[in-house]
Length: 286
Image (cartoon, rainbow, N blue to C red; front, top):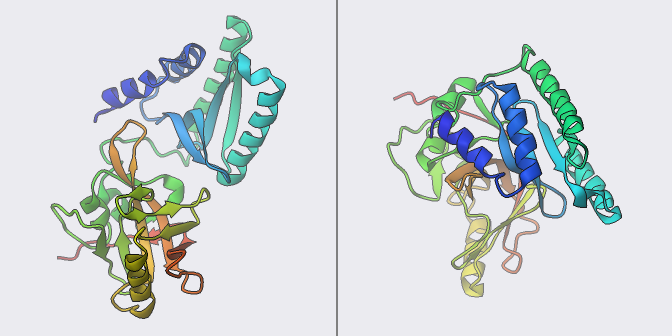
């Protein structure tokens, strides 16, 4: 996907909300900078479930929310305050609200303030231009030397993720792969019920539960992992299989997890606890 296709598809996601479509498209057109990435209808984790924000600029950790008429009822005002606090506490990001119930002149004035802020942030020495051609490439993160949760890293294929850790695969489809550190493996799970597996990740993404719905297989699976640490590594770098916000399949980095041997059992399943948001990448020396 090139930038033209990406931008058109992102803007197309707002077409069913007239005021949101106007505010989002006007911001993007006034910013007029293809080195700045934007995401519409961005998922954000909350303590209870997830939230969608109307417009997100990942390079600046900045969300824009468009408040239409229903947002100004007493119920929505309270709910929005809780939701906004959850997002800020979970991410540390900034949220700017645009009141779409005002006159067109007042809406445009708010938009101009948003655009001015974005352009100011763009001038910072720490700004890294968006390059869609390298965003999903393993070499980008090999050269950087690490993958960090703050960078919202995702790969289009399992082999691209694997190649960040010393592999040189042309193709790879398994759910697990080796890592240069013998205590760690790479894991590419579906963190939702799938087939006979009921895998879940907590809203704060700090805990993963892995369990087979068949009690006998669950017992065998858990017992085997707890007893045989050499065969079943107790640390996993997780790239969860997800749907991208444009409907494409991605493998999104979730962090480094370690097996909670104390609380894992056949009833609960295997409990994996996050121990790091950043992992080291490795060059292929072959």
